[in-house]
Image (cartoon, rainbow, N blue to C red; front, side, top):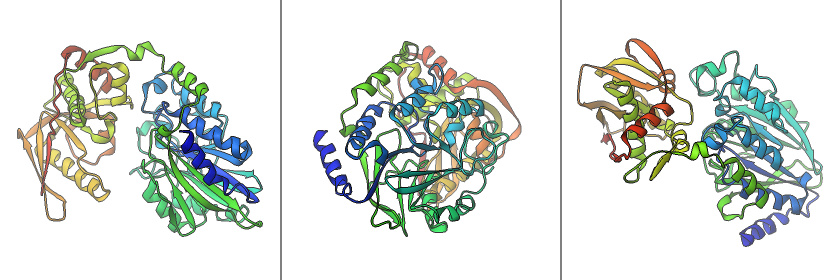
Length: 464
C-alpha cells in the first residue's frame, strides 16, 4: 500500500511545481457500500497532505444510497453515508436516480444535513438543490454543473413514479447548453453528471463547453484516459471499489486543462483507522445480522434469481412469477442468510403486483425487453418462476419467438412494481397491488423452507 501511494503521489507531484494545480478525487454510484470508505479516506488525506486541503476537491457522481442495509435501514435511515461524506469533507455531489428511492421528504432532509452543495441543474421543484457551483482553488476558477438522468419514458429518472410527483426534469443537453456563457467566465468547466457513459460522450459532442465530465449511473470503469474533443470523461465503476484522481493545471494564466487522470483501486490502500472505527460502529447492528435461515450449498447468480422468483410465486399462489435482472442486486449467497442479505438482494422496497397475461402477451414482454436490451449491449432481463423459456433469435440476434414451458393460454402472474410500471407490455383485465414487499416474502420463504437446496440452473435459453 505504501509503495502504491508513493508512486501515485510522485506522479502527481510533477504537477505540484506548476503555478496552478488542483487535484480532483471523484466517486460515483456508492450505493451505500461503505466498507472501502476508510481506504478512500487514506487516499484523500494523503493527497491533502501533499497538496494542501485547498488544492484537493472531493466530488461524487450520484447514487449514494440504496444497496446496503447498514446504511439504508439505519436509524435514522440513510444518514450514515451523509455522516461519512461530511466527515471526509466532500465538496460537491450530483443527484442520481436512486437518491429519490425513499421519497422527496427524506431526500430533502438528508440534503439539508449535507455540509456540501448537491447539484441538479435539470431538477426542478426539489428544495435544497443548486443548479451549479463556482469555486476558486489555487487560482483556478471552476464552474460545476450538475446533470441528472431524465431518460425514462416519462422524462424523469427511473424509479417509482410517486417519488417524482411535482418535479420536472428538463432535457439534459438543452440544460447544459444554457451554461455556455458561464464557461466564458471561468478557467475550467466541469459537468458533474449522473446520466451514464454513452450520454456523457453525447454531452461532450453536442455541448462542447466542458473540460471535464465526472460521470455516474452506468457503473463504467474508465481505467484509461477517455477524451472527446477537449473534454475528458471519467467514471469509477460502482460500490466504492475505485476512485478517480484527476489533475487539473493552468500555466501562465492560460485556460486550465486536465493534465492526467487515473483510476485508483481502493483495496490496494490501507484503511484509515479513524474511518474504520466509524464504519465498524455503523455496521454493528445485531438486528440485521440475525440469521433468518440457511442454505445447504452456495447459490450462484442463477440461484439467487430463482430464489427471488420462487419465493414470489409460492407466496402469491400464481402460475408465473417474474422479476427483472437489474432488480436482483446480490449474485452469490451461502451459509446462513440474514436480514441484511435479504435486503441486499432487493434494496428497493419493491412491492408485488398480480395480473393475468395471455401466452402472447408474456412472449411479447420477453421479446420486447430482450430486443431493447440487445440494442444497449445487454441481454436476458426477464427472470421467471413457474415457467422456463427459450428465446429464438434471427441472424441479427433479435428475438423472433419465445417457447414457454409449460405452455398455457392464460397465466396468473406476479411481478414487482418497478417491472409493472416501467416496462411496456399488455395484460388482461386489471392489476392488483398486493402490498407485499419482496423482502418480507423472501424472509417468509427462507424461514419456512430452511435449510434451502439451491437451484442454480438458468431457466432461460437463447438459441441462434
